[in-house]
Length: 229
Image 1 (cartoon, rainbow, N blue to C red):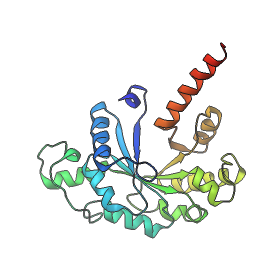
Image 2: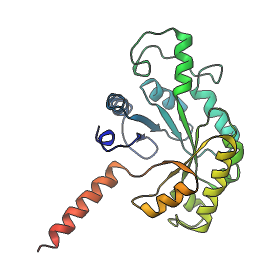
Image 3: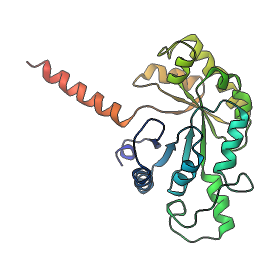
Image 4: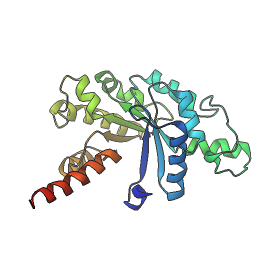
């Protein structure tokens, strides 16, 4: 609700690094839907059973870590979309269907259409294969994980380096060629750099986290109070 009131388009629940339970994540998805904001979920690499459970719980999209090849992207699509696009199992009436009975054929088509799939590009291999990954039907966004990519490139934390910028440009070109969106994660509190990323074609930006925003708020207030001593 706070994110919705702040004007954000979506939130995401992080199962790759976070400690939330499936039940908590499902409650967050339902709350986000009620507040009019899209809930996304990042699942651990290859955890497609968890991914489909979160889709059943109302997740509007999935962040898929460490996608390095078109074959991995195709496998993911096969697991998380219904036939004829994949082989996801139908879980019946629930949060994803807003608990409303609907003709199954119409419902399956709607659920396939409304799922957003973000393939995370986090290694030099993934960057090299970006064009092939972007060509996979059912992948909507190529999301660069800037921190992991910088580590894999041997330049940890150098998110404004020529190497990272070159990778962003290469992935952006692949997105443009195949009608997909470019996403960037890992950049925080840097208006000038955000503007540069948008200029490079970024359409989806992960701009912060609950812990990060809490820390910024506390730090600012404590600094102000300390200055009064």
